[in-house]
Length: 138
Image (cartoon, rainbow, N blue to C red; front, side, top):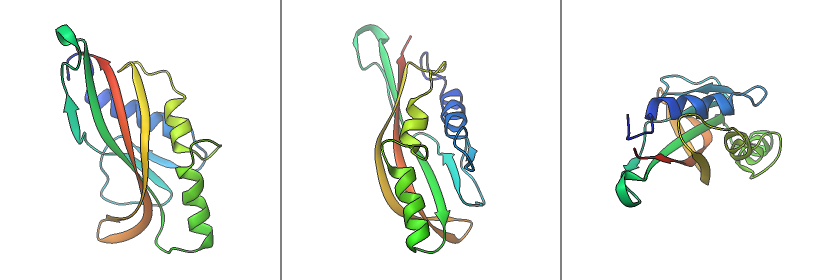
């Protein structure tokens, strides 16, 4: 528990929001194997406590990872571009931010970065999303 924000519940709700996207396999925890397209939420990069007076706000910075395939070609690039877009049926940002969260007050996808991501010694074409969750500290 992070003040009034439960980290595990936030991770589960983010994964559930992404899971509403058609054809995307989603997990609320780091994975040991991938079957693209796959999205997962990693453990927090940073937790900031007491950002306002009297335990008012805590903030959790997490990464969400998405892999689409092993080869950088036109098809995989187009899929990844759609997932990285700020809007549209395949937008991770739009899906994650559209949900009303119970485990925190607000979730924002603030950054999407193209990356080659290794899972179980296999390198995939993918994206790392920076996700910021904010909630009551008390």
